[in-house]
Image 1: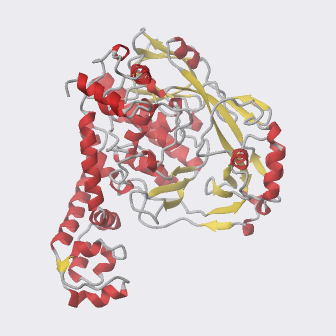
Image 2 (image 1 turned 135 degrees about the vertical axis):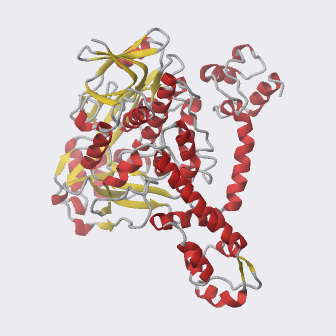
Image 3 (image 1 turned 30 degrees about the vertical axis):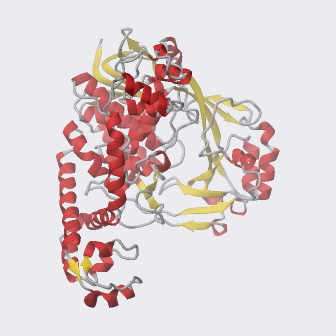
Length: 625
């Protein structure tokens, strides 16, 4: 019996779910293969989505017609906008989700997506004809054939968990590792290596002294992840709590270091520098007498809590005794200890920007298999891989996002150009055009592209056009409406800003940090009328978008000019035009790295670590530029 599909997606984590949904919604007959249908889109670590730069990625996924933002809003039990004290380029949405409902919501979406089938099994081999992927073989001996295959294996490839000196083979606690795939891909010429990540202890809320902790409430305003008007937060909102470790806690942790897999040689791979374990913190920051911890609820109907900031692979007894030294946890009861996990990944410089591998056509990698960490990074990659897998089967131009278009574009370009030497995590500092890549305008940047592709719906595009028209009408009003000192100065002083010496356009006032369209509308009836014309369902969102463009227009225009200038180099294609090893005027390092990475454009070549401006000039001269 022969099973035929257009696209097969292996793994139903955050990358796999987005890849499968995208390919199916674009019209490809899609099969999603997962080892456990009850763990679809499992939040393996903390039950939260978004955060610094990660929140921007989720907004981009939503703007492109992906599902992560929708699922997060519908299962959120706390929402916060981080970095509000900074400019809007740094604002980053973050939500706590109900872990169980997150899985249920994602599964409901997938099971009701046309063209999408699900198969519960372990993939043990990729089928190829030597040049391209043609399907997969599973542990049950079933062969599925397809035009494209997307691998999103997460931490399951030869996964090995560590709790003290105890080692358990598995991809996640109580779940088996995936075997066979790494070995096959290495035999086909792929370069693989190992990485490490970890997760904290899970705590029973009934054993916590919450009076010894500080409450961290969420926010209740219009902000959310999805741009759709019919997606809202539906669940009761919960608080988080914070507390600190102390010297006695650190003393116990230090005593346990000889049995720590990180320090006794048991773990040999590299972990995430930006999300260190508690034992790494007390070693790296030995002068610190305390570290902040965040206690986060796992859902509305469970007593299970996640202790953010206490990731550990120390022995169980050490973890418990260290926790008991913290007043809030003196009577602590836990559901399971923290653990570290090592797993296989593949050097992402072996990929094109479409996330198709260079070695085997129609084979795509997305998520932690590429050396990244985080649900959001995985989801963004999965979406791009799913779109391009569909395109490979049905024709069309490759779908690639530029560094000036999306954080997802920055993420993928960093991976395929620079590779990774530790689990890659997105930060706003990685994006040189972050003023253009704000969380408020992902729909303006990406929805039209997705609509033309066939992924974003007509309803989503209509909402975009309504928002654009209302936003631009407000900006136009402010640019052309004149204000006079005699009517405003008393009110301006009450709002804490300097009176006007002479008349000006309203937009000049909006530039002041103390002033907003809303508080100015209390002084200017015509502005109030203009604001009242904004659609009620998206009133605050549209007003905020207009205000940001007015206040930061100078910075935005300047950054766009820089992006356009650099963008000209993105149009100079060089792949296949040079035998780099024969160009003796290039440095030895440049010849080696250009040969290994084989950049698509001059701009990509310029971003390869070790490639100097003089190397780029040599290539431009050889091109006749």
